[in-house]
Length: 584
Image (cartoon, rainbow, N blue to C red; front, top):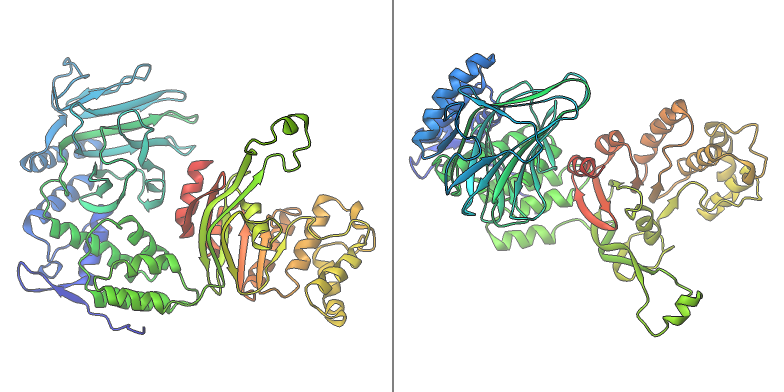
């Protein structure tokens, strides 16, 4: 399909007046950042929503702590007027801080933690190196609720802070909702929202109806499925690190019973604000930002018409490299089922398609040990190296593969070239891929020069073609004095440099690189990165096992994250990188 025409407005059913997407996008983006915004009738937002946004904006814009505490009292009035119960500030310093609302929500300090301070300015969590403070909000009756908190963070100047907001479901493992950094807030370990740590922020968080919902400064920024139907508690966790004190001030903390939206905000206004964030991402021209916005707001209703979604699909498909994951997010938004099918049928064919692939090996393939012989007749022990992996890669893709040691990265590459048999699933590839890894395919008794000849012939090159690149390969690998020595006498660095130099000099349609970018000293690695960038532009498809975030974030079009053989995420590199950071 080739529909790129796009409307710039839709009609508000409350007023029958048109709403301008661009103005709505500017308002939503600025409001979420706590920056000044201006509402016009064209944004379509109701007065109830605008009054809350204005109260939040005037509060988070406070220049110092005294101004923030004073402004928080006005915000408290707006929050209370919409049915929220104030937990802080709300009682005298001598009151029992372990129980604020009998039979509703309790506020507790886990044993062994440094006590927090609670006074007329709010709640203050202050920790030094080696100390920890957790603020634990528990639902006494198990009912879901919204948590509203105004935060001001003050981090030590040296290291990255350790502060997070998590939710609990009975005795299950805690789930991270927010992680605080100097550069911004990470939502659900997936997407970082740029936000200076010194800026005050107002959050509304709930887990209700099986989804995690986060509002930042009154704007919905996250709504996706949760592993549990509701949260039975929340924890604000602050850990002291070397380099100075970390302090979190909460001038306002409140709760309310969990409905679909917080603070009695009309559902249509929430949909308009979510639409504004997506529109702001689209207007930025960054496919990554659009992907992240649609990913984070997957559970939110958006106010776009189908023709607007069709236009975004057309714009995304007009990029040099097709993004199947972004395409999925957009196509899923179409209300017209026939139109969805048409877009799915018109997708380009992937160069590589992996469907439900698993790799399982026997832990003792030969069964030649005495214990193995005694166990004959029993089911053999199996080791699952890959578990139900699916992905599509298209022409022009550079797919980064992240994961800790033993995650299954090399196993995947070997299975793609047939070096390891798959036990389930299917792999379809347009042409034969080539796997290059340190030492792979090199004959130890042959010289470096002879190995270049052998590899070139294996790749289908003619002898004159090999001779034409010989000096360039040797020179880049810095092996002029050693090229006629047997390969078995090369150091690990020399071997890796020669293989990398050959890999990036010979033509390949589909190339698999397994940790070849760490060879040599820093100077060689910088030259290798420049050479790789030029080479990647000539290849049809590249899969790279890599541990450096810079390469994944700047060069990869997609990224796969594996952990213990299980695919954790495939899609936007920035999301994969955030998830990987949490595993380290």
